[in-house]
Amino acid sequence: MRPRWRLRQQGERTSASSAVVPAMFNNLKARTTPGRYILWSSVDSELIPVPLRIPREFYIHMRQPKESILPQELPFLNLYKLAVHEDTYQEMGEHFIGLASDPNVDGVFELQIPLAVRALVKLGISQCL
Image 1 (cartoon, rainbow, N blue to C red):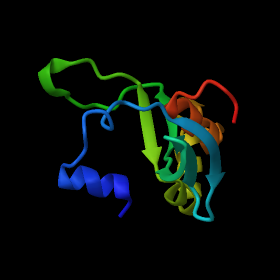
Image 2: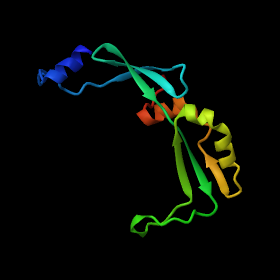
Image 3: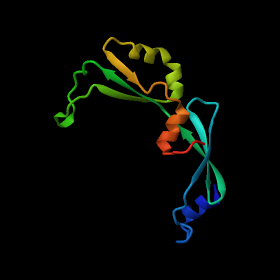
Image 4: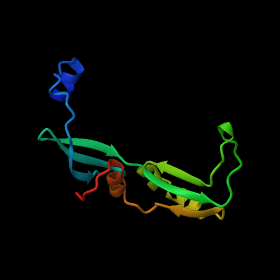
């Protein structure tokens, strides 16, 4: 256990050390498992690895909505967001290709965005690493 976490667990943090400290993101490195990354961040002049699991997200626009009744009689939209783990996406690639080529599908969006770019957008990093 890291010393900082041990102090937090024991409740011995002082008010000066519990102040919000900005973190700088230094590097985003892909691991051998698809969809998994290590984000290297420097906090208090200490380099800390943060493991990330980034899902594959894309949107499918259907021509006709599926017949469903939503709670509180809300309108059922034709745009669906799909989020799956990258290893599942690669294992079941034919399923997603078949889903995208369905005649009822009007369009598929954000399918080819790299996972590293998606991670940077989710984290809100505006500068290139």
